Length: 327
Image (cartoon, rainbow, N blue to C red; front, side):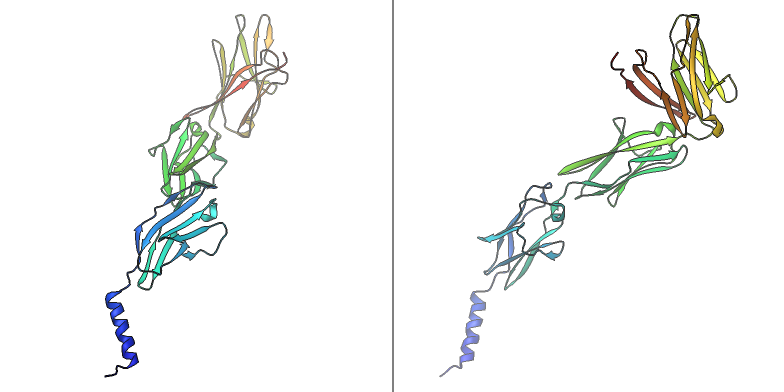
């Protein structure tokens, strides 16, 4: 009996399928997310199984990775490796390894962990006292990122005073009603498993008409001492706008700002039987900027200077150290 040739072929394929069925690909050892920093290497490596021949391809963010001299790919002894010798920002993303044979295909998606970066941030923010304010930083990087805001070395928490928000890679610090004591430098920090970044934001809360500004001078000398405050050439006395205080070695002027004419140049002069002193130190408060001018420095000029701004809701200070050279 002669069997047709096509029948012999069909029988061969049947027995091949019965006794030599192809095994679909599997991942024997899976790679995990890779943590790296800019300039360092990143390596994805996984071991695969399945009936040969096996072919391996790699994707980034769903797109096939073309031939690139800056990316090394190998597949030997059922071990697939993708290596980036020097990572750049453009290398970040979700990487997928696909293994294929005649029985099917299998994919695995590890990823590169990018360090955080601060893409947008304010440098100086000015707000009028009593108005709401929000300090915002826009971030990039691989989750999970943690953020914090710090002032005067103390980490701020959400509460009645501050509201902290972090969503969609935007971190913000909000204050419903900014007060003078809110002025100052705020430190923002963001970090993840591979790095951290920080920046500083300066908040300036401006006094408005009706606020009280206190200017203070330290005085010394043989008693009795008398202190005189002047605005330009006009001598100041106690009034509804100005309050003059002299207690021991401290002379202060409390000035209520009620109109634009209240801004200008103020000076403090101290006098005793031996003479007077103070003409070379003048304070200017104009356009919400307080300036102390010393036209000619001498040995008495050196020391620590404190600028204090006092309002109904609190006090804010700025301290400077002055050193006089060449004496």
